[in-house]
Image 1: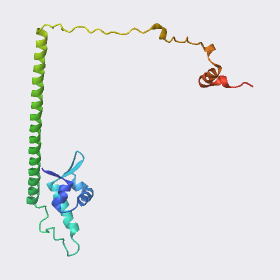
Image 2 (image 1 turned 120 degrees about the vertical axis):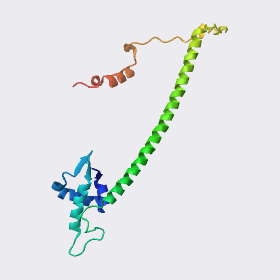
Image 3 (image 1 turned 180 degrees about the vertical axis):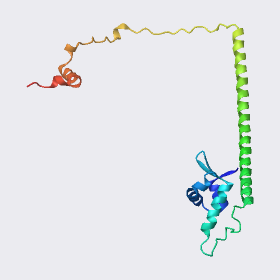
Image 4 (image 1 turned 45 degrees about the vertical axis):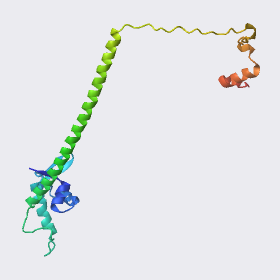
Length: 190
């Protein structure tokens, strides 16, 4: 059996999808064998659409007036309409599939060309490595460069001052050190 979505059933019946959903709720017992939920999508088969159409025919009659788009002589959905709809849907899906297959073949060609390029580069690298292994390393014929550093006179050198001990630190500086690192020593005791 062919199943269609609620939206597609609404198009076949010529109503809104909300009307079809309301009918699904009200006719739950009658439609339990004709409705499936596939991946969270509610699907109806042809018999389910026929049942909904029968109830729509009854509900669309108001007194002696019947709506023009519902044929009262037929109590079931026009089968040729469903088949045409399904054929159109099948045709569009075939087009999508052929386009996807073509895109995949183009991607495969690109991947194959990239792989071929990389494999030729790897072969060239292997050849270069083999050539380097077989050839002896030639010594360079360059002469070493001599760097001449001028001699610095010793009397112009500045002697570093000896590092002072904490006792020799000036009192104001010592206070700042205590202030930043040992603030508890700054407090005056009563």
